[in-house]
Image (tube, rainbow, N blue to C red):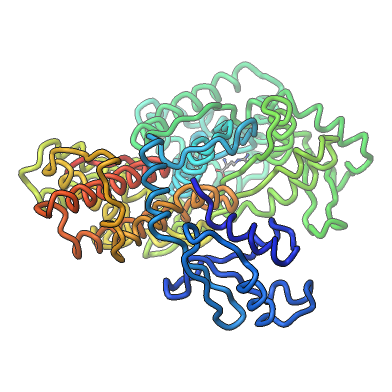
Length: 569
Ligand code: ARG
């Protein structure tokens, strides 16, 4: 597709003798239509060209030679040059691209690049909580979008299936296992055991010591400990799978922390050789104070057990070797920011090529807050995710029943709407923001929500169904799509691929969520202002085609976010 921004950059570069790439970086997309479609802030070049911005602006305007078919008008406003693109050319480009490309916006720009995404990663024997849901949802959206752009994408569920807490659980199970029905309701029962043994540990140092010892035995491969651990793991995974089934989550690898149990020795040996691994109160640590990190990274505890950080270091080495990654993303709450800072810093000591250490990136997200406050795992104030998702489905069902009780397959639809609402809510705002989980907001059909986009999509489907045909592109008269509302949509559609690229530049799926809200709103305006069916034939065809494009892109976009579309609702 014709790249307007690049064309403008090329011309400005010609006139000013400044590097084209640099120019391109400065070009902005104005918020108001009245400031053109692209704007160039001339003050960015003032220093370099040793001229005042208005002088630069005039120079550029005078000398520039852009085909009228590309730019129809150039205006100087303050130190800015505003460019108005030729709307007919834009419309032609968009329609042509859409016609030629069943998977609109799909690209190959990521070819031969490997992206590892570490996400979801709930902890065995603990509830799959709403923070893990956020990780699952953000990670999956990034996964889909990278893939759509042609990257080779590897999704890893780095399960929390190892660590000292298993020493505790094993001890609790040994003491009271018979009192609990863990086969039937594993997570809840194991959580109860965990809370109980934790209490006991707080009171009795000896029990705590025994728990630590259990974990050590587990690491050494003790068969009894391993057997109990395997049982906990299997039962937990079966539970987690219920959530993944509801969300439609898939992973390429389920290598959790335990997978690295035999790969940590190498890490310790490498670190040893650097001379940076030092003793501190019986533990072995890497001091990071000179890197501006005041908490040292603990590699080995005083009883010889490894840590969460050591396992992450082993995972980095393993992933570099196995996947040859260009980027390795870690999607977790911002509570783990320090952990990843430490791990990424220590990773520089592993002797890996810089390509790998530069590619490590923590993708933190904010907390999910109930209107009543933070959800916590340790204190037992947990919302079980499976219940939450099922509640979403039930609530969606009630709304649908109220709005359209005649509908067939209400259950299927309620599932798509309910789950879609929860997923979209996780992606609606920039990820670092804390999010308040409030049912009325999430399920509001008129808000900036998943159901609103689904509802708009369903409207496009019903228009297309009534139309009974999709016109051929060659029968579309572009001139009939030059009204404000049509052009607004066309401009948004033009920006689809660029939006996906921005998502990957910032690891920020909300850029796509906002985009889809804008597209849905633009369509609602178009629909309110323009009659689609029952118009004179040529006009009707053009507008049906617009509807068809919007319909497709809404669906593609939502599926990239991991959300399914109902055809009716
Ligand atoms: N299991 C961890 C948790 O629940 C998340 C793991 C994230 N991934 C990683 N490689 N550390 O907090």
